[in-house]
Image 1: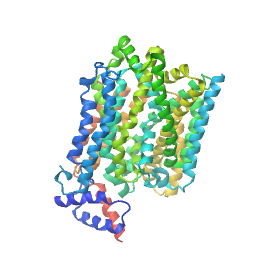
Image 2: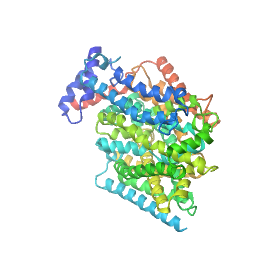
Image 3: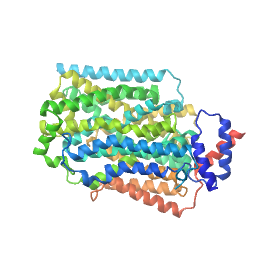
Image 4: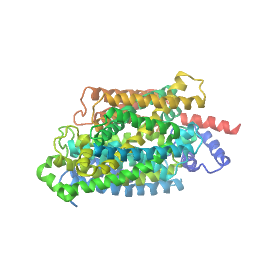
Length: 117
Length: 490
């Protein structure tokens, strides 16, 4: 049953609106068989994506005592302003990494980190 | 008087253009409830991006951020902290919410709770709490709109009258066009906002100080304490920053209107890619801080910091330019207000009236009721705006402290098998109670922490404890999936 979960939940997530209902119905049928096991409706995010997402949280939120100061002044900005503006630009980079990780796991449900951790 | 006529004429032209775009976008399509509230789930990346940006960057961006930079200083940096992080959170929450929304044809945030926890009473409760906390947010927009017209008319038009006129227009285009009209007005608004913010944010430091660098040099010399937390406040230091950033970045997509807006996306991948690129849009935010900081030196001693930006623009630029900025500001109030009214009225009609009060209503009657509610809610927020005098940021944080209490119910609902309806219900009650108790007794921040965050922690603890004490539920998403399946088979 655990294996079924790993295989099928990513599959149903991938079924897009464009596909014909006849493709979807068999999936529903199989899922129905294992539904007693399935409390949570969605696949958990991959560990890689979560690690990527933690980077901006640490840099922007938890490390505030380290960067909340005026010196060094960079590009005319106090360091705390400069730091946060820089992370406006760096956060999308991290999340692009997370996006790639998620896309990888969705397309390859057999990957270990694509299932429930 | 002449200057005020010019400024007001520009504002009227911009607002009328916005209203026209809204009406036009709405009238090309036939409207049922699904089209009106979620745009038939057919929005691509660009339109969802505009819709989300349109809602995320509100009057608050324009006036509240510069107002806080003026009156409080560095604590305003929490805005630069939460904005990128709320998209990080949305990356993990919105795509699965959208998947659930498509499978079970969810239209509102309360629908999510109704289906996941199989309780129409929990759904009605969530809807009610959502509507209550939308009112202060709506009030932010109304108050901002009033300020803009008041300043632009050089005091000739009273704020109350300005608010009434503008909100008649908002209610008008919400009623006729639904979410699609609102999304397209966002296009106009965003162009103006970008133009206005970039120009004003660069020009004002340049005119008064010779550049952004020299402006900061001057601030470092005269008011260094203003530039690091807690700035010009006594109780908004690092703990407050961390707790507020966590509360707001987690709570942002718990606003019923933002949660509901995700249903209008074409696919969950649209939402994921959106979450990746959205932080770039926040780049206009620091420019608003610069204007507020410039005002601390150029215009010291304003009683209401929220007026700092407009007053400085009026002092620096010709009247027509004040009109353009005012018009952009008016649209940044109207667009989000439109979406909020839409969300609140749909919640009321769909999740409170039909399931609880009048079970026999048809879809058409619900749609009609939603439209009547638009007017009721608009008037309610209008009254509340006229009789209250909080600052914009204070109002916004009041709303956030409330809606963030939905977060445990949504996250556990998506990713946990063990969470129960009773647990989520008790958690929301506990979280809202703790937050409101601290906020009303003026103990926010409490021991350096944001009171909403303290409420959220209590909430999460209560959800866990009560869920473990109540018997396991199978979870409504699976039940519905089964009955859907039966329907398809027959």
